[in-house]
Image (cartoon, rainbow, N blue to C red; front, side, top):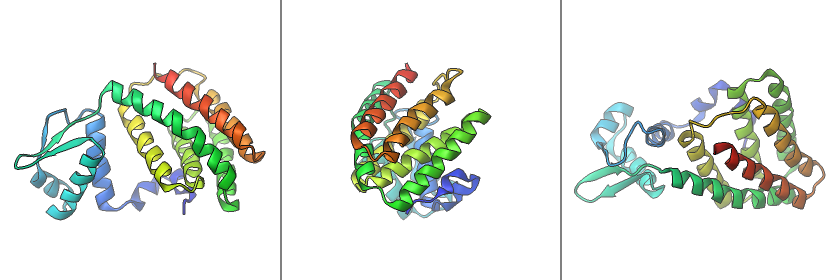
Length: 219
């Protein structure tokens, strides 16, 4: 069950040590701190994160499954990284999944989930006026996470959260226009109003527009 913890600075403390370690490594790869072809030494990770070999190997296995590293028998783990084309593809895949997710969420959302979405949108309206970009980005991620969860489709939710994580860290050079926060607020308002009206088709259309404009903002 989701909560509004994503609005708090203590949200990271709710993650397990293994989750934090995995994200730390993934972020280093996505941001280029670990370069393509670079070997990841298992023992170094054990010492860095204070973990035994078993959880470290499990982390490396998950990173390999996500395509960020390659495990070569008798040689070890090597960074694969992510290319500009990979990021473009992920934006495109999100643009295909997100409208369907919103449509399902509008059809399936529970009363508690709707109230959480409503409260989050109210936070969004308030913090847009403060022009606090970092806070707004956190709220925007929370708004979408609630929608993913409300679709009640774990495979879709997992895929979209993965895409958002990659986009967030592999897209650090994005330029934000002066009216960025207001523009994104209005895009999210159209999505939220579709939830309020219980109109899945309008929600899917608003989500498609938001996904397309998000891709264009990266250019």
